[in-house]
Length: 505
Image (tube, rainbow, N blue to C red; front, side, top):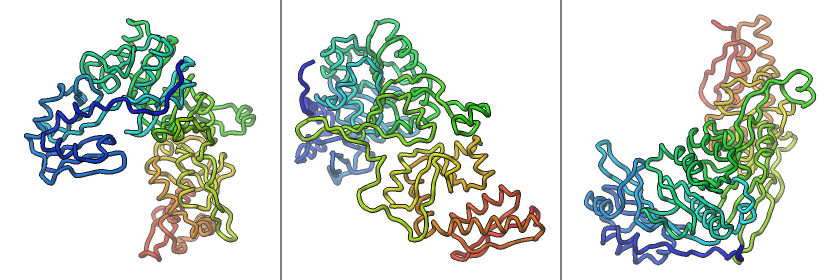
């Protein structure tokens, strides 16, 4: 394989991009000093046109976009497909439409497509191994750009038979002749996004590829097609929705890509041997992909080289740290440990005379929760077993399934906090509720609530608890449910409090 080069932009075909814009907008855009860093142009009916660059946004004109402006662009690009995407022939640019209820275009997003060499320098040792690789990352981080060069390098440098399944013509560009950025790789276009899975299978059955390249696996049928391809011994390189491997593990539609998840009931002896609950989550099959690459930034990735082992660890509640690589200014690859496993430098904030609250994340992203903890400097620690936990944090989806860990946690009177969604913002709100000022009061308030519950069960008609925050009141209501008692909140903040009584009281 020839010596790799540092990241270098090859072509953006900006002249073709500017040619489809209304002349007044194209003229203003041409005058922007950082035109080469243009990401996309947004044209929404009745609003000023906007340009988005790597590091800024700019209004291109005080004049609002008209229906004639939108028609001008639509007439100069290819026909829009079922996914409302079009292109410019022999380029990598993508035009996406927003339509009103009558089907008329009322908005356009024109995204600049770039052919770039050097984007896979950071993972070049992985792509030639024959292992199937899944690329994850947020929109716009460079997944398709990297995927395109993977196809070129495998076809040209490794001399493999590569077939690209190009659903929206984003990998090889618009038109019947593919963009030269894919090298000698062959491209199969997809009539409509709903048929991507069928074309994936057709590619294997009809064209004898050694490698299949697919952008955006997003449905159950596509996940099943990916497994079929892998089982036939064909290397698969693809992208999927999601930022991290643990995100993907919790995605019911796409978890099959990493082996799938099933609930298993162990025998008493096996549960004791493992030191776990009797009902546990396990991976149900070998992963479709051997390696997962989390694209964190354009020149920084996290790599999980053995997906099966990582998924098993996640399901056991263990923290998982990817191998982190980055490119320096000279294009050299730097290897480093993942920051997610380590606190930020400096002293960890503590609450005087109070031990950290021990949290067990179950069915939620542990790495995301660790990030939220670091951001807030919260006096909490994450544990890996229910017996060690002061509080269990789970998602609404997992709580509704009533797994054994949740049931046994409730029997042991361990408070369970249910997040509305498995997002970083929800975790920040949760940690805000148990900020350093409340870590001690949580234990005291729950002890008071337990004593009140026993007194009501022994005959007292009603007991009013001390005023507490909304977070602690929520835990007190949950505790009442476990004791089979009724509860209600009364009073005004900050004196609002919970009272316990028997049902009907």
